[in-house]
Image 1: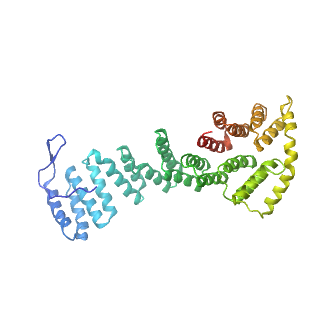
Image 2: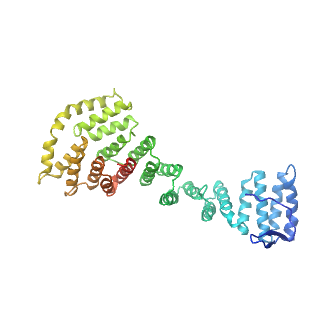
Image 3: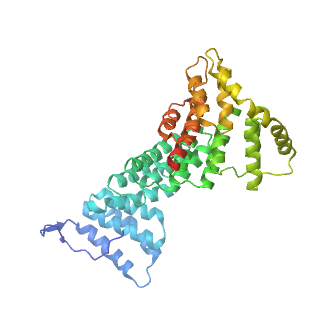
Length: 402
């Protein structure tokens, strides 16, 4: 950024773009103060102590804005030579204050000023310069990331995340990719500071933009750790994780087994345990696992044989909500999604139904049948504690293209 330093004379001229000569208004006193400093800079081995000592007299000699710009450039250069960030900051801010920085360089100069202010923990001024850099068109790197960090450094997480959100949403709206580091940073801030809604918003974006087994595994872990989910919510979240092969810890298989319950959904419990064993993640010698599988396996045949009777009862005009939901759950656990969809759709219109739970499972049953639009429409209606789970299912639907 530093401009080439030259000895000054009065008057000096610079060439305008239109070819006209524009006089530079350097004062005689400033020229007298500047030229000796220029000689120090040009020395084969610059005397850094003498250069630093010359700064106050150079500043004191300023009379015009052209003086200020050259003084600022010189001080910035001295700061670079002496590795003194305070002098660098003084110099670049003087150049900006002079009003002589070319318009095409304003973004760059403000970015440097903002970075130097940030590094010295002068966060208020850093934000001012960084915003000016962004307004001037600076985008690489994006000044807003450092603005967000300046808020995080002051524990102003809401303000920082608002800046980060805006930058991400702007890129998404323009169809541009979002830096992975932005998403990871927002997720980390939300997770480490117990901001569940923020953590899940970034987790969802992360899974959406950078899907992989590792990312989905992290996203599921965040969802479980940041929310006080009970068995029904855990079950629907881990159903998604299983499809994505994102259960990479034995404990998550244990939670899945507990949530499904060998007595309630024995077929699903057997299938989950076998999947865990075949993957090598789930321990074959764990007493809880082997006992649960034995109990579930003993019930599967009878449970499956009861499905026609369960369906008949649930289709009755006077069927209770409990009966209808039990039918939907049973058929969904055996991958009979058309029947599950039928019963969840019926339950949705019944008094007392947990609408968000029913919508989630209705969407899952529809997705299993390739009814992506219908499934996403139902996921979009889920509210409350289940909303993050439904959003993850919707992201999964988009990624499968089913």
